[in-house]
Image 1 (cartoon, rainbow, N blue to C red):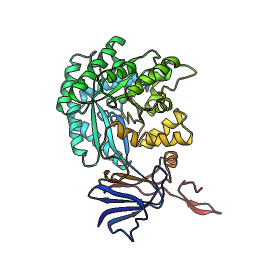
Image 2: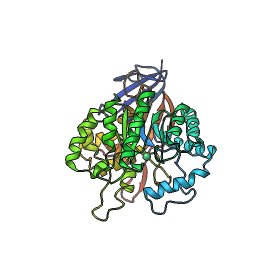
Image 3: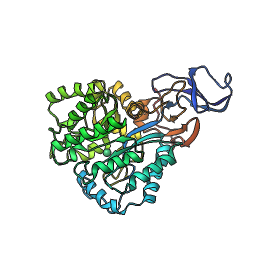
Image 4: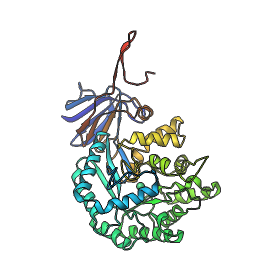
Length: 428
Ligand code: FE2
């Protein structure tokens, strides 16, 4: 007997009337015609033709800062630089328990939103390793329902801050998974390049993945992604290195980008764009026209690289908005990048599901036999409708067990001539 049978589902690739069979936490079959009449299961769910997807994955987040909004004060200007200053003011007041409590509260939101894998940067600038220890504890605690991958992130600059390299190495030795960096925050372009080289060499030595905040500025002459791709090639780190943000690419000279993209593709660089944050923090020195400051997502995808959209911030010193809703993130990316062709909208859905899963090197992620039985059932009939509605997550499963449910969104209308209900689904 099966543990779980979900039938009458639509899949993100467009297949309809699909049944998914689950046994011992894994998918055993994805097929048509496997109905409750022919396959006995302890639990049967009729998906009602709605979209059954693999869970959302966030490839870029800061869980040590999340839900700290207003501590010790609000960011009055809403700018990146005031946000960094504010984080510096908050750091001396952080406690282990408060960090854990806020992170766990966010993880509850994540599960409710069908977000079951998160790559979070953790600031390694503090030699006490307080935030690192707290997020390692959170990682262990949430492991049954969220894959939390941690990046050693030297917020103050690995070369710029005293002891930066030693602190980052300490974080890695404590169990942080990925090597991070922030080359554009080092004092000179040369120091930034040196930090990229040093950190990539460290990752190669230790067999770690790399994910750097890279060129997060409007400077058209910022060149750290070039160094990152070059080092990935030189050290044989193909497919193991991610450039996060890359907002300067928005402002770069087109001829230079035509030379840069093949170098990035050769290194099999992955890219994470953070549309909610990029559209609000970049272009702040501009008058009009104002640059959008988001990297060249469709062009990077067309060059064959894996691109994900990340949440980055949620109610923290940099951003007062956010709720762990990856459909909101993807919807913003879709609009900012003008990805409104039918195939591009589908790609935006992939950018918060299977693309980030590939970037995290998540094992067992997928909708086929042998994969983990991790799903989200959305109140939408296809990925484009899911993006349009930021669709309700009707049911969320982890390893075949139901972990969250939300009632369907339905409005009851009491119009005199049309007493009816509506759920915003399009009937064509
Ligand atoms: Fe970030």
